[in-house]
Length: 255
Ligand SMILES: Nc1ncnc2c1ncn2[C@@H]1O[C@H](COP(=O)(O)OP(=O)(O)OP(=O)(O)O)[C@@H](O)[C@H]1O
Ligand SMILES: [Mg+2]
Image 1 (cartoon, rainbow, N blue to C red):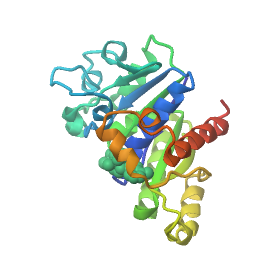
Image 2 (tube, rainbow, N blue to C red):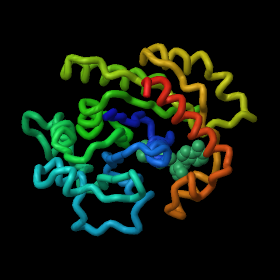
Image 3 (spheres, rainbow, N blue to C red):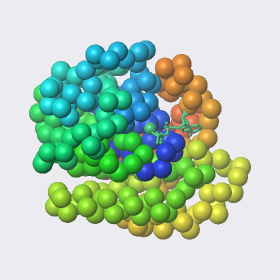
């Protein structure tokens, strides 16, 4: 089982989109996958669910230790389960203060009975307790980066956090790669940023994925239609971009 956090403290760079497409792509390859929506905005859950009632069991119940992942997860497709996110978790940093609060998710994952090949965790655009829990649980981080909102400072903060996590867990959490998103081959932005992007990769001790994800409205459309990208737009170029990324990821981590 490999656990992957999708993280960048910048908002709107395609974390949630990548988490959803990545998970469905792996499930379609026949892997058994669990998605965890660890962002109180719950955008990932919204991608898959018609509506969520206040009583629906969610990740919140993991943090307040009322339930385990096996009781909470819902099946959203063949080979793909989801732990839904919860708006209540926007107070998590203040609400959960006891010792061990950084290992709540790790503990819950350890207790899962189902055998998953991959667990993918979507994280919020900050480095609070929810992101730390995701990192401490993970084997890899994938960092989506939008060329139009690139921030080296954000990368430095991420690096600092990964170092803190390494101190806490006494093992380095590798960044599997930086995934360029919202890419537009007609503009020169990514060329101009090439040096900065390479410094970012170097700082995180990783490489850019060769596959990049182009800017494509079909992603937003599929989310509004609550269909996964592979069913909504099987022949779109951006669908191929994501397939390429998934294959490259699997190759990088040696699966
Ligand atoms: N490659 C792309 N081309 C066009 N639109 C995209 C692309 N990737 C994501 N989007 C759109 O951009 C918006 C933000 O994407 P997404 O929610 O995945 O980002 P995020 O990093 O998870 O944001 P947040 O930090 O708020 O959680 C969404 O409306 C999504 O549909
Ligand atoms: Mg998101």
